[in-house]
Image 1 (cartoon, one colour):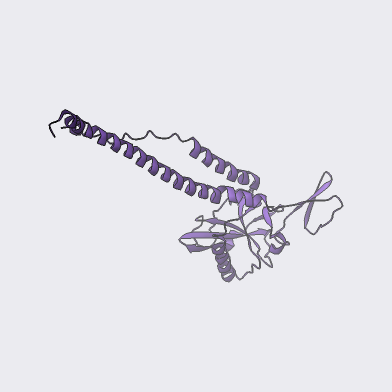
Image 2: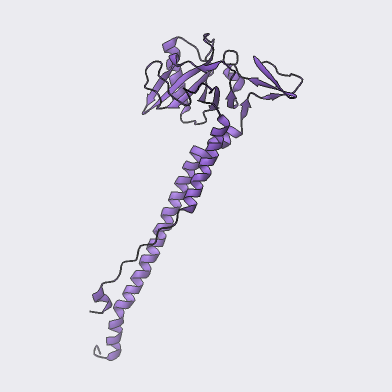
Length: 255
């Protein structure tokens, strides 16, 4: 029976059938693995992009900007500095007079001319990273409560008067962009508590800001970086699929 020509032909075709089936399985396996990897990568990159770029942008855009524009009747002129622009009044924030409770919904803050950083009261709290803080003050007079703080991560040595965060050396910088990272806020609060103890000061309701000249540009950069990362992910060309493992010549030949 084994010597029948049909059986011999079937035996000679078996390696080809096995090879084709193996190639097909290799393709499907590769496709499944590639799809799984792409799905996981998309989820991770999407979450990171939203967490670091888009969420801060949306959070800042959804809360207030100070100074606020007031009606021309002068209502709510409880701020120290007012500037008339057309039919509206612009008020700038003075850290010597305003309290943290008054600006709890602040996202972007433009401080009055004469506001700066008091790096002599800088402090850092270390938990793997260094969480650096320095009070935002007006002039040289001590404040009853230091409620406005410039912050940064790993931009100080932890020693007194060392603060190199944000635009600390820009003389035109007198604006703050609110810290929106909930995971970092407790560490900055601990740094402020250390500063209170070290310098015998009070911070009744500290608010944390990145010190800069143009917070609007920084907020737009959040959005721009988010879309850039999305474009990079979408426009990266797919690498050529690796060739499936070829069957051994001896198997193909039926030997």
